[in-house]
Image 1: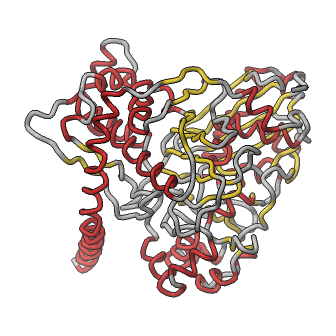
Image 2: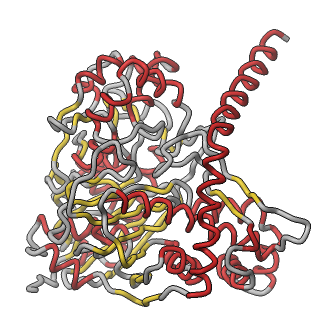
Image 3: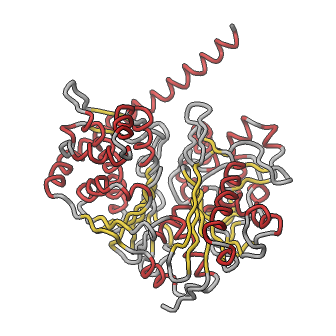
Amino acid sequence: MEIKSENYLLGMDCGTTNMKAILLRGDGKIVATASRRSTTYSPGTDMQEQDACEWWDNAVEIFRELNIKAGPEIIHRVQGIAISSHTVTLLPLDHEGWPLRKALTCQDNRSSAELESILQQMGLERFVQIVGGQPSPAFLPNKILWFKNREPELFARTDCLLQASSYINFRLTGEKTTDIDQAVRTQCLDVNTMEWSEEIGKILGVDLNKLLPKPVPVDEIIGTVTEKAAKETGLVAGIPVLAGCSDALASMYATGMSRLGEAGESSGTTSLIFVGSDIQSAPDIPGATKPSPTQGMPWIADPPHQASGASIKWFIETMAAEEQEYAKANDKNVYTYLNEMALEAEPGCRGLFYFPYLLGEKAPLWNSYAKGMLIGLGMDTTRNELVRSVFEGTAYAIRHVMETVKESGAKANVLRICGGGAKSRTWSMIKASMLHMPVLVLDENSGDVPVGDALIAGHKVGIFPDLTEAVNEIVKVKEVIEPNPEWEEAYDRYYPYYVEMYRHLDEDLKKLKSTVAELAANKKIGSRIV
């Protein structure tokens, strides 16, 4: 592969937990990285919001840090910028381009009632025919209806709705756009015509063509860094900026998947799962496939698991005060200590199950009323077992996803893993044994989501003429973790209970959510009367 190594690319991912960017040299070497934490606000039940102004402030700090670390000479050689982000988000902007409220993120489930209303009017079958996938409160139609009905004054002032990456692109270029990848994921797009759905717009009572920018290809150059943005960020005016994509698609490139039989996981706050297929499954299958961006797989299933890394974070913040104190006293990273603790417990934790549905669940359940649960606690349950059960619960969920997409025709016999979760060798060992396949842990300098962004940009501007070849050469495997036969046997015995226990509780959890909502509404009414 002929590579123009004197050129550089900037890839950035706006994740739900962190915003991170890299400078990638033409030979695949990362010469500088920078990141900032993203703040998530929870103003009420099922509500998850982020501040777009913080996105931009973080982006500015990151760009400036890259400038300092790499130096002006390298910044002047940046040939293209591509940005991905978590999706689907509702961010309303006014006519001057200012955010009207905090953005409702993909983890926000407050609009489940609005989704039910949409489905009652359209019918589930017709909705799925239009959008090509299963409905969920995570997506945009119900969020738009919630915003229109609950905050009508702000809605009336709304010029357009953008995704997170599109907002940063707007601040860089002055252009309000959306990419076709995220457009498909909004469930406002008619996948049969690849245009915003008039039928869904009528149900919502809005003109989607006015509210949402016209979708453009992921690798389309939407504009260049403006003089104003250059002064603010330390970048160079005139650098081409691509439309970008979802973190899911960027992750697909970052994992280095290129042939049937390979699966990938971008393990972060959520887990993005990718499984190649040589057939397109029906849209009513939870693992419905989309056209693949790589040459070795005609189709790709990319079902997301909602709260993998979020489960570990939740455990640390709410239940691991003792572990945090011990780690601090012994100069250890708390994540490292939790990995060590998990290895002290037996596989399966003697029947202790953690269900990682803290934010409802996307694939394969696709419902907002699922709840996180610990089942199997006893007086003799140890803290080591509690820790391991969280790791195992997320792995059970990934197995559930994997088996569902395999039933629809996808193929997987090896898992390539990147992201923050890939740093946990214990977790990867559990996943290998749970899934009966080797886990290929990617090198930290190759498997990160912004690398996928940089690869997309590099292909567009001519630095990587053959993208598949570039992916294969740049994305490196650091370690291959094989399944543990004893763990495999235990997980095969326990996994059916994981699936069946949730199925038995599904209807009760649905009723429970309604009861909680009714009691909360009554409490609000009572407080107003008083």
